Image (cartoon, rainbow, N blue to C red; front, side, top):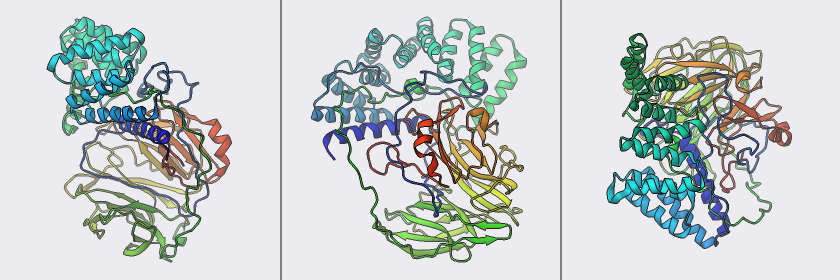
Length: 611
């Protein structure tokens, strides 16, 4: 790979990670998760270079949403510099590496070292807005050491000379003046950001704080009421609103808000995930480092044809077959991939082995060869891997005909079945199984979509059956919670599900795809609160979907959707606030490829996602 492409690849990888960090729920560490459910009999093709940039025709800011509970779309994290002269590739590589190092040090709260890194960057590229702001962030968090607070203010003021509406610089100046107790100046700068991005809950919260400190309580209350409406799980805003209701003698409004705050506060693990603070990255997207856009890199040469995969096919040591259950046929076996025995190589859990649809472990040697391992269970359909017991290895949640099973890993790739609550699973078939932290408590919960009569892939005539959700109690026990969380949906036969933080409010949401019907969005409002949105209302004009996957296709910080129905494949771009838009260019070029299952990955190591 030539130097220019190395530089661009590093830059794109940083952007991709930054976008991922911006949207993923901030659940604490303690588990490693890798799960994929892919079809073995796949109709479709690999699409290279899917990571195109944001649509230039899309207006900046926030797209209109379907309702008041929708969350804001984060604007692209980018510098607004005019493009200077192209840098020497060797210098650009050095500068970019130092820039990325500084951003990583900010994430580690090593503010002194981060400041040194960004100072070195600006010595090479004076006036680079992204580096100036990131240096200001580092200075601001150094607690006044060596005049760092004044240095942060000076840098932000320099940015505003050429970019007066720069929201990051304005927001940080608001933080600066709030820290000094100068509420009038803090309100001025927060107000500028709030005017540009009125849907950001952190901006609304900080602006309301400044207004209340000025005695403008009615304005602050109005702002906070909108904030808690947009994000019912934002604990800090509930407490501040309670205080203002009390101060204005609105006790009838204050008590319900206080009760909601108590619920949210009790659900917090360390008081940082759904609250606002002064530590780096604890006050929303405008209090995070900017990405390296704006660095004047040389353009790479046009890429020639690439051979991505070898034409040689490796035969697995097992026979894969469709199999029948009493109410249909399973023609699409499931597979999950992960390092099961800790040897650094990827292994497989493969369903549909032999006449009984057995789930088998296949151990990989890192060279594309797999050896048969443990036989797990017959009539298996949907494997999902994740660290359910938080012991550092991958466990298995296995969907089946009849009772689903949870298998715990001993760390060496040997699985032992563990007990789950008794259920009425006779005559049921799990079409999709997922492990996900739905309640943001730091452990994985167990989700299973089911049908009482139907085949896989699921067809429109499939009979519905309630979805199952086992909440992980973190003590080796599990509680059935689908009804309490509004996910049972007994009237729908669900063919597929994808989960992500689609509305950028730091928790996981679901998009569910019923067989032969439009999708349903399950919006997580945290602590057993939720609401449902119809697919048509959010722009997902599809029906009869059999598979879907999600990733940030265009690197705008919001997860997009690819939906497959066996005949067509469609890309839906997330425009924010629960509004999706079908990509017409993608549909024209690739829509007829069809397919039943898909996965995003950077197959050619060029920094963008392929499909």
